[in-house]
Length: 240
Image (cartoon, rainbow, N blue to C red; front, side):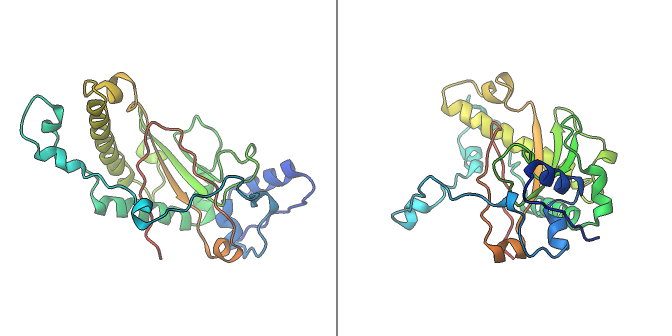
């Protein structure tokens, strides 16, 4: 179902509300054949200079093989008790496919999940800060609060049922291992960050869909990511 947004250009709050009321997000604009991006998505030039790496080595992202901790000789360290429980690649692929299925689903199937009520454990929306940020990001997000109390299966969209629970369990195990490693590296007992400091008390999964042909053709810049959690595990989408 195509969605049109009446944009006046003179009343920002009214235009944002009109967009939000469609409950279709940016996917609705793409499905409607948008040729001009609404002004409230356009970002001013970044005032901060972008550092250019002097070499490929400087630009490389460091990779740490957590499973190497399993190969250390047995001893008093908690690291020797860890098993190979990293997130399987197949599970991550299934989670990406599930989020993509949800985003590609018919609008009527997604509308029941569209809300800004943070009391709901499953929320679909476009831009959590739509009415507060200087410019909106070209993205729609499905949020599932999986801990401390997970939603019931009926609350999770059919496209994501099953795999969302399995993925959350795998990410939680990975998070526990990471916080044990960090605690040990800081000279703390292994349970300090994850258990005592509460870094593992919550687990939120966010499936973000934002890239599109319309975005690429109009060269709309993406908003800079903001991380408000203790740590974030990201599943990158493979290029088409």
